[in-house]
Each structure stands twice: as C-alpha cells, then as structure tokens.
Length: 330
Ligand code: NAP
Image 1: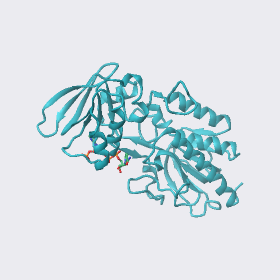
Image 2: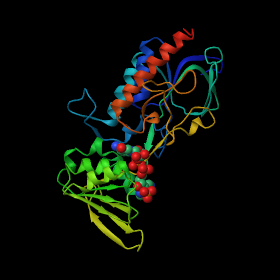
Image 3: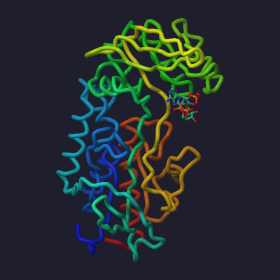
C-alpha cells in the first residue's frame, strides 16, 4: 500500500460486520480495502474472522439450515467480499488520526508495518472479545469444541449439553441471562460466583433463581477445567476458605464480561460510551466524527450476535456510500 494512495472506504476488522460492510461497499464500486489483523497465538482483539473463529457449530445464522462451523462461515464471508473486489490486508491498524474534513483531507491510519494509509471513509468493525478466566484447559477445550463456551445463546442448545449439569461463571446480567437460558437444556445449572452477592439486576436474578434446576455456588472460583476431549468437571476454590472441591459438569459457560477492541482508537476523538463501546447516533452507523462509521460488537454491547453484526455492517456501508456521495467523493 503506497503512502500516497487514498482509499474511498477502509474497513478495520473481519468479523461478520467487517465482511458484510466489505460486500456492500465493493458492490457499490467503492473499491474497499479491509485490514483484518493477523493471527496470533492467543485470541486478541484483532483475531481475523472475529469471535466466530472460536465457535464450533453455528446453528442460528439464517441460511444454514444444517448449521455451519464458525470458521467455515467466516471463510464464506471473506470469499463473498473478495469476489466483488475487496482487497484484504493482513495487518493491524494501530493508530488513527481522524480528520475534521476527510473529503478534502483524508483520515490517516497507521498500520502495524509502520505505513500510513489515507482514507475518506473508515468503518470500524473490530468487535469485542469475550473475557476468559485465563486457564490453559479452559482455552484448550474452548478452541476444540470440548464443551467450554463464552456464549450460551450461541452454543447452549447443542445436543451435547442436553440433560447434563452445566455451569456458568459470573455474577452479572449476562451470567443470569445465559444461566436462565440454559435451564431449558441442563439438568442442573450452577452459577459459580466469586463473591456472596450477585452484581446482576434483581429482576434477572429472580428470573434465574425461580427455575427449579437453578443453583448458585457462592464464593467460588474455577481454578481448573477437567477433561481430555470433552469437559468432565471443574475444580473450584472457595474464595474465603481456599478449600478446593470438584464439580462434575458437562458444559462450562464463561460470562464474565466482554472487552470491546478499541485500544487503537485511543486519543482518536471517537466517542465511546460508559462501557468503552463506540457510541453511535441512533439507528445509524455514524460516530461523532465525519467519515467515521462503526458496526458490530465494537459498537453493540447488547445483542452481540453474528447476524446483528452483519446487519450493522450493511448499515455502515450504506451510510458510508451516502456520505461519500454527499461530500462529493466519487
Ligand atoms: P458485568 O456486569 O461486568 O459482570 C461481570 C461478572 O463477572 C461480575 O459478576 C464479575 O464479578 C464477574 N467476573 C469478572 N471477572 C471475573 C473473573 N476473572 N473470574 C470470575 N468472575 C469474574 O458484565 P455482564 O454481565 O456481561 O454485563 C455487561 C453489561 O451488559 C452490564 O451493564 C449489564 O447490565 C448489561 N446486560 C444487560 C442485560 C439485560 O438487561 N438483558 C443482559 C446482559 C448484559 P464481580 O461481581 O465480583 O465483579
């Protein structure tokens, strides 16, 4: 990429939002370029393909009646974007200098290779990463489809979790929501929480605790995940007495929050909300800055689904296309 070229649309991120934005921008003849990051040993904020790369079976993405694996689905997304001419760069954008008049003075994006790329419109679609406890066996079984997941809504209905004891780690609204959902499938659903009171709102707590197969294990921390191919249980440590115990479970769902991938936006002027997600103007992909749009989980702490992210990617491409036309960039 030469320093002097100016992109019409530059997309950062390669999950459902980024690729959908690319498909729409490419079909609108905007010749988009997508910066997709590069694969790292540990999943980080710029995992190419996004969170679906850590998902085995996706059963709720429309158009795949028999299901599809997360990596396969992302391969389809990428191929579709490339088919219409999206250029793909396996580098990260590490810093953004956004312009106040990007039609005349394009934005300047710094890449991990030390290059500065200029673009009139930028679509931010870097996603959010689920927080993990950080145990080696937890990550191993999450990657291999061994019954460890960070999304009960995505994975909880899979046949392997039916009528087994299941555990959810966390004490916030997400943990309650996921645990309540899992009570439909699991024999007993344990919420494992490190303190003696939940952070979740009362109504969400009551919804879970009202289920006959709901149980909270207070003051407990998961210190190991047991099982070779499939999870068989977890080792718990009491956070007060430090006593260790084993809990047999057929599934572990980690619900300890998400971190939006916005580090590279530090000092860029893009407005974030109170939780660190990109703040959008209502029912659009417009951020507070001209020519800067956002889509997917990086701007959505609420729905966090592949299909909603894809929809937001479409919105961002349409907004960028209309904005470029309005400011006279063609
Ligand atoms: P959260 O509110 O930040 O809660 C995270 C939970 O995980 C806390 O209970 C925390 O424990 C626990 N935790 C954090 N790190 C941990 C670790 N290393 N080991 C064990 N436990 C750990 O996150 P969230 O539940 O994802 O919710 C995020 C936001 O979305 C909130 O504002 C929430 O209200 C909202 N939300 C709303 C709904 C809804 O209304 N339908 C549904 C989902 C989420 P401590 O409590 O000890 O800190």
